[in-house]
Image 1 (cartoon, helix red, strand yellow):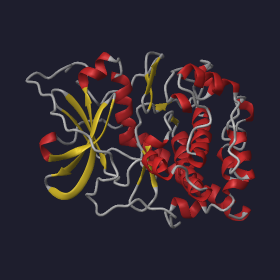
Image 2: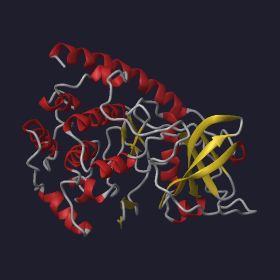
Image 3: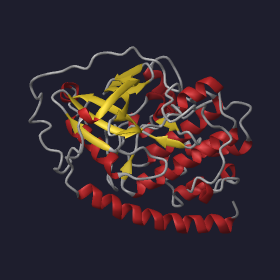
Length: 373
């Protein structure tokens, strides 16, 4: 993209962000209440499971052609892990965000046992699955995905949000080949304040998180550097069997660069994976412009990406809107039921202000790794 077109993009996108912030703040202040119920949906199959519960594919009974991904969170687990306010914040954020490359909340409700978050069904599957199958992405495809992550981060950061859990498992690919970032479990409204919570994924943690230095949006730009490296290499730059070994490598800032990385790619990663935040691209005076204007992104049409007019070089294999074959098979388990409304006091109201999350124990997950602080 020429300098003139890039400058116009910056100007136009800033206006878009200003309007988006007004919309977000209005939505954020609105009373938040359940807007559906389980009986309105037919459950088809499990799409994924995790420490939070499970995600299932559902159809809306009134409109059989409408498919959704429904996240089920057991209230008892949320309470026992002291994540009530954390979870309420996640739901409120998912309800208020509206951006092309972000998953958003369609419906929310609860029953005696679970909280239910209903989102659009993105049937291309997780980026992680495609990366595992392809071993690594070529630079053109990695650049295409990274550009959408950057635009999404600019949007979130402009709203005062820090995402904190970027990884291929949290990026879905839609039927057209574009991405949708999902899972706001660690997303937090910080505005210009610092936060100290240890949360994220070991391989993707920024040094300032590990060192308990207090941080803001800098950690998202670090995770972008990790993602760009992993997409192009097929593995993250800092890896070890033990989390503590991973942390030692991250804090040292030393990593090996695969020989097939182009000169521009090497330079971009070097400038993002800076342990010294005063040198890290994304949070310098130029902000995101330093990243978007880098030589590696020179061929990117930012306006075309934002308007989804750029034709992807790769699309997931999808047979139809109800095709869920891009997700792994899981043994179905019966839902837990109860005649009593469990933890009714803890989840009595969803229209009060969210209390800021204090430093405390949070799960850190990366595939099969779990660490707590």
